[in-house]
Image 1 (cartoon, chains in turn yellow, cyan):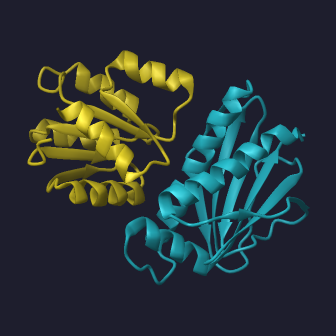
Image 2 (cartoon, chains in turn yellow, cyan):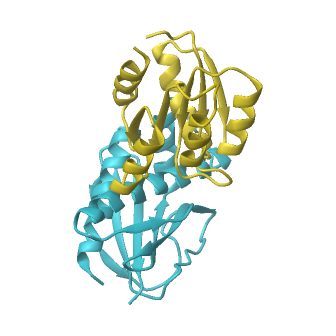
Length: 124
Length: 153
């Protein structure tokens, strides 16, 4: 797993961004950027090159699903790995995310191992 | 109130706290709460809509939430501040999410709003519906917390 890549973490809760950053740092990732909603995330994506997106679903302004659809419609990011980390895991949510092109899905609450396993799968 | 609506919140609370904060949680005996006074120092409140409308609230004693968030962050938290408030909101969100998945398995589908957080001594918890407020106390080695579940009659 290449840990030199630039990762964008998107969550409206600073708590979750902090927990994810801690886990990613433990895994060796150092190049981390964060946004607190989909709109801010998109501004970052337009301004710099991001190699992996980790996003919550339920956020104000632009949801994680809306961000995913925008990313997949973009020439620059249509193949960029996109990990959804969310408490929204009812069947319809998972179906919508898969149809929109999510790379993988982690349900909150999660362990550090669960994040590591999913990243190994989508970054190999 | 349909008692099948309560157990998923107990199960999810235990799982969220044990998974994210590595804390052993013991559920006490549920009771009907008759006032709006919070049983702790900081509360997360979240509205639910679906087969019934209601709210859940999660209220932590100060020492308990400081230990919980310290474990989540891997560093010592010593005061109630905006970081603690944010963490309570996210914990409430996760408890709701997992409970809703369990409820979906018995055919009861709910959507959740974004949680709000109230902090301070003797604060009130306002449920959005007027149904009975079922409170479930929990104990940990760092203190106590309570969840309240209230659905419309």
